[in-house]
Length: 405
Ligand code: ADE
Picture 1: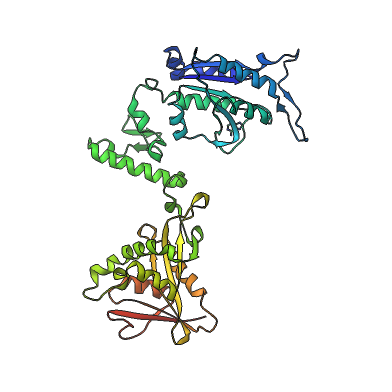
Picture 2 (picture 1 turned 135 degrees about the horizontal axis):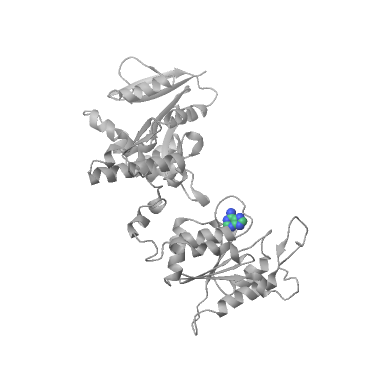
C-alpha cells in the first residue's frame, strides 16, 4: 500500500520509521511518502495561511499550495494507470475513524492524507480534490487537535498493521478490541500469583486450568461485561435501555400489528406451559384479531429509538379502554415487555402510562390475569392493585382493581 502525507511539519511523521510500521516500510509492504506543503508555495515567506473571509478567529490554509500539492501527488501515481489515491482529510468534523473504516482502507492500494492546521483548509480545496479523487473527512474523536498530523499517525498505524505480514501473528488481529464489535478481554502473564508489596494478586484460575473451551467462554463473557460497562453504545441498542424514558412510546396503528402479534406470542408462552386447559387469547389470536383489538382499545407500543428516522424494535406494549357500559372503570391489559428487557421497570411504567390516559370520569382501574401466573399478580399488587375475590371475568383468571387517586 502507498500512503502520501501532505503537511507543513514533515518531521511530525518521523515515528512512522519506528517499530512494526517502520519495518513494513523497509520490507516494501508500506510505501509512505511525506510531502512538505511549503514546497508548493511561490512567495518568499512560503505562506500557507491567511485570515478568514467573514471574520472570525485564527487563520485558514490557502487553496493554491494545497491544489498544487495534491495535483503533484496524483501525478506521481503508477505510470500509465488511471489510479488516484483515496484522500483522507483529518478534522474534528469528519466521520468517526473506526476499526471497521481502518479495515476498509487497508484494502485500498493508495491513500493520501491532507494534514490541515489552524482553522482548517479553504473549502474550495475539498471541491478541487473531490473532482479528482474520492475524499473522506475523518475524525479521530470528539475533541480538537492542533492539526491533522496526530490523526495521520494514528490512521497510518491502524491501517498499516492490517496489511498482510505487518503484524506477525494474524490471530492477534482477530482477537483484539473492536474486532467483532466488542472490547478486548483482560490479559495476564507470569507470575500466576504476584506479590504486590504484600498483596497477592492472582491470575483467574480458569486461565491456568488448560480447558480451552472454558477459557474461550470466560474470555467472551469478559468481553461482553467490559463492553457493557465501558462502551454500552457498541452493544445492541436495546441493551442500553434503562427505563421507559429511553423508549419511543406511541399509540399503535395497524402497521404495528405484526410485531405486536409476535411479541404477545413470545410473552404468553410461559403461561401456556403452566395454564392447563384454559384457552389463552393472546396466543390464539390471528393478525386480523390483533388489528381488530387496536380498534376496540387504545394500545400503546414502545420502541427502541433508531437512527435516521428508521423504525426501532417494538419491545413493549399495553392497552386500555373505558369499560363498555361503565364509564367509571378503565380496563387495562395486554401488558408485555420483550424477554431481554424485563426487570427494568418498563412494565410498571407502561401500565402507569396507560392509567394516566383514563378519562376524568374514571374512578377505578381494572386488570385481569391468569390465575396460575403468581408473578403477574405480585407485579400488579406492587402497582397498587388488589385481588377481587372469586373467579375472574374469564375462565381461569383473576381480576384486580385499584381506586383512582
Ligand atoms: N484535527 C483536529 N482535530 C481532529 C480530530 N479530532 N480528528 C482528526 N483530525 C483532527
